[in-house]
Image (cartoon, rainbow, N blue to C red; front, side, top):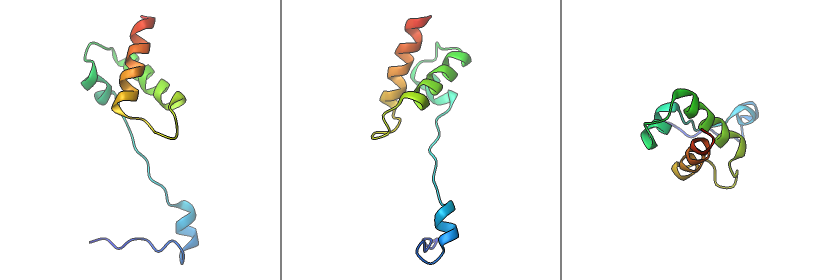
Length: 73
């Protein structure tokens, strides 16, 4: 089992410590496989740029932006 980082004693590590969550084109296509790659990228860009930071990006967020993108085409 990995030991948790001791952020109080290692200030440099604490300063640089972060996590990321990623979504990709395949995730978007799993919700709607009729989209082009460019449309999937647009969905991901919209989600990144417009999501509510209190809630993050969820499957529902992606579905919302899929609908937005499909309305423009």
